[in-house]
Length: 406
Image (tube, rainbow, N blue to C red):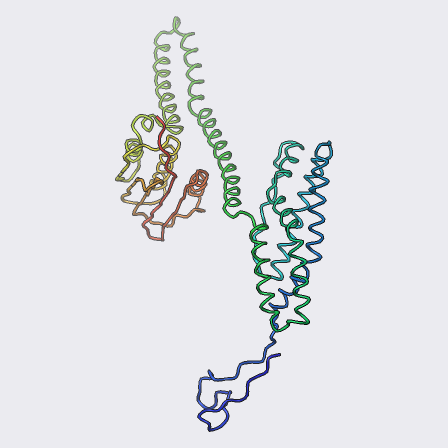
């Protein structure tokens, strides 16, 4: 235990009061008594002493897996045994990360679990486990740490009796090496894990979006153009029957069928525009967005500053993003004017749609904003909404720029 220092004197006039009653701010109070070996130091010492049994077990496990599993891979049971052993090494790594968190204060994220449930068949699950980098890194961690475990155990145990004044410093240095090993071999690759999780999520979003688009197209065809074409066929059939008996009625029915044909063609054009408008393919974003803006119920100023056209997929996503945002302006904003700006900044395509309406737009507001954010996120894009109550509303979207293939 560290002892308190002797009571000091102020200018030799007497002992210093520590209760602040003399008008001082208490800054010259005596330091409190505290143990030389605090709880943090004892945790590090405990971790270093536990290194020996833990590393002995881990080394035996790793060597057994590598020797037996590697030898038996020539047989039918070798690959399943190796896969199970690597799954077991994952659990050993989990225990080591827990020990490091509890005793060393190292916060290491857990790696993503293997997506075995999504594998197609037993062999794919087996192969997924065999090539698991987390399991192999844990085996490497267990295989190389036996000499270190012996060294730390002997050093700390000896220092407890011989070098105890220096033990806190020795423990801190040895524990820092352990921290580096845990972070280096047992922590997931943050960027890789993040990208894997994003890609898995984005794949689901793309599949769901494609399925929703197919259902929408099917519904539009069934309820719109298809129904009109069925009525047209029935009307022409009746007109054919009456052609000789009642030519005037037949002519009127043909005239009505002609009107139905025009309406069906218009619906098919609208449907085709919803899939991919011809003006976008032929003339690019400037003309296509101007066409969308002309159908908006409020005046829209469109500014497209692009020296080159982006890839067709990026161009299509940009078009439909602006189209849906302008539909929201027409339906929900009560705005008097709006603007659309599109430009390129290095390797990003930026879109900004602004209106002077009532504001209050949110991603969870039920106006399709969440779907737009998911669509852009599926292609590594960004979507941000700034819409305070009372307006204005500014929606900014970013897409990765990819050059157009001619």
